[in-house]
Length: 598
Ligand SMILES: Cc1cc2nc3c(=O)[nH]c(=O)nc-3n(C[C@H](O)[C@H](O)[C@H](O)COP(=O)(O)O)c2cc1C
Ligand code: SF4
Image 1 (cartoon, rainbow, N blue to C red):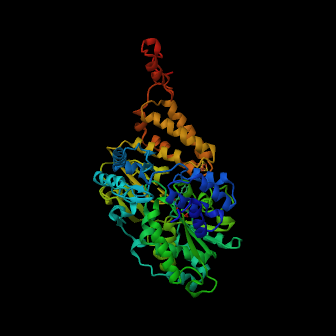
Image 2: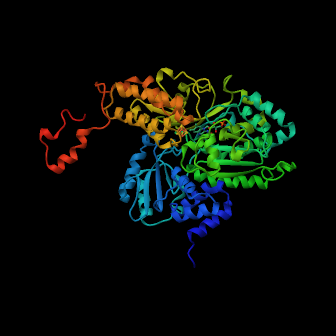
Image 3: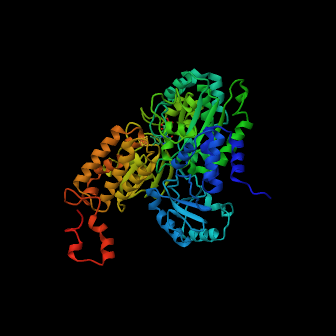
């Protein structure tokens, strides 16, 4: 049988996805999946077929961390390396696997069989150590399982034949409230808007006080209404399922067990704003959810809940496509997400115009979080009062919290807004707590004196992340992990963030190794302030939060490690002369700089 060439494969993908440049990223992801890299021939062929410059395709490959021009191993293994993964022993199992396979971490073995490395949070903080194997999630890795993985890899057993129980992602719901415990019959929210009309539905949404669950907390009706009123040939609904905030893993549950309600919410939104097109932007780390989501969309098409003439209503046409992300946290930012949907690098846009007037392909677009769409569907059926029966004045309803770190019962907890940190800690069985990091890497590090604070937009706002650190932990390890995360995830578009994240990380590393001085602390304050003021988007504006916040709330953490001198260089000249001393065989006093370093 004739061998399938790279161009044959790409022709197949173009047939499936269409010859539009906006599908370029989706095609590249599939090329990466099947060939374990993006060969130069593929780049060249795709550029010609899609009529775009070759450099544009190369730029795209360079931007997304799951795409590679150099071949990765046939078994491409990435361990989750959020701080809570480390606390579960992730680095230990990663090192053990690499050692047993004879490959250095972060590299590909010379025979091309296997690559082992790290990625940031894969959304499994409650059931780690976790890893992605050829993109698919493995949880609860143990030394024993590592041994079995080595045998399977050396025996060239395809990943599809590995034990299926290794790939189980548990729901891990530890507390339910109105959102998770109230039923929603198929099509009920759609029927309601068709029955009462769009204006009445929007009033209900307004009255409910629903605010976005993705972090920023923008009023949902405040977003839907202007989009409906904007001028444009069509409208677009986008579900932000990028869930990249370290320590957040609630959307994975909603997409796995409540996808019907999420899609119902998107369809409700489509009815309100008048959209015919929808997207679910699914983070690449959640590849394991793709099949189930596609099946749910198909089921709804067959039930008349998606597609043409929904619920028999002439002219109500709406369908949804799933686009995968490829390992870029910035693509969770809504305008970067839209760029990515259009097949481009995920650079945040200059606003205005805002997506509600000019989003995907210039069309008015609503972008909402997964949980927001689900809540909207429930409000559509149960009404505003039902929703307002929980929460505070400014934060109505409930919030899904994802709890990880030092506690007896990590997992997903649904709480009414207004719950205190103290209450959450009691419920999940946390003891001897030193700090709680709320809202991910850019959030707040809350000390015990503030455990009376509330989870609410008016106090501690969070997309869900709630990471617990007991007294035995070195909090600076957490800070360093987050600082490194931002260096990696800065999209590089603007200087304050691109350079600032690196400078902050370098100075922080000096603190960690005990080489920093007061001058370094002052410098971090200055750089952090500049990043907040001058960065183009939310990532850069908040990337210094963790360092500045812990300097403020946990000053002893830094003071203990500071050198008393007012200046300590980052570069140690005396240490770097060591190699020269070894080559020349000199170790007399004249071969050393006085006092070491300059
Ligand atoms: C760097 C960055 C990453 C973000 N990541 C996400 C994300 O993963 N999921 C999400 O829903 N919102 C994320 N957001 C917020 C989105 O920009 C946007 O506000 C949100 O999707 C709107 O939906 P909502 O109103 O329902 O919250 C992120 C924002 C920034 C600045
Ligand atoms: S702030 Fe950072 S992530 Fe945002 S645009 Fe600038 S470089 Fe990119």
